[in-house]
Amino acid sequence: MVLNSVPKLVLKDLKKDEKVRLGGLVEENSVARNDTKINFTITDLKKTIEVTYEGILPDLFREGQGVIVKGYLQNNIFEATEVLAKHDENYMPPEVKEALEATK
Image (cartoon, rainbow, N blue to C red; front, side, top):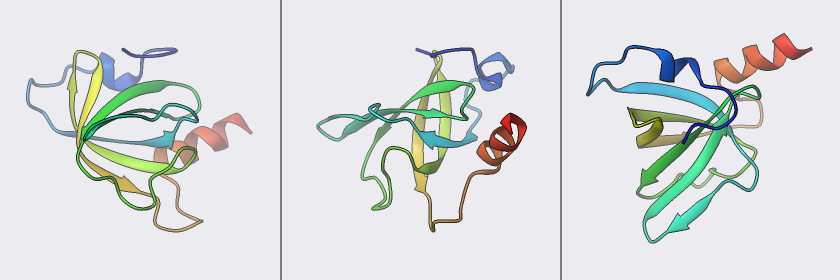
């Protein structure tokens, strides 16, 4: 399920098995765990997309923090194969930085 308005990624003509990378902030109150599967939403403060991931998350992963997810878009849900978390207090994914600057 894609929330709010449709991210550009959904509108792109991706090949069936094309691996892509998304950056954004983990939305507050969006993380849900079910055994080893984790569902969460990332946002660029304009658009959001649901992400599903199976595995161990980085120690720095938490709501409100920057992440980069790598994986595949399947039925408008991003199936991540890798989740990278913010590495210091100054890091922000380029996509989020641009969105923040555009809203100022």
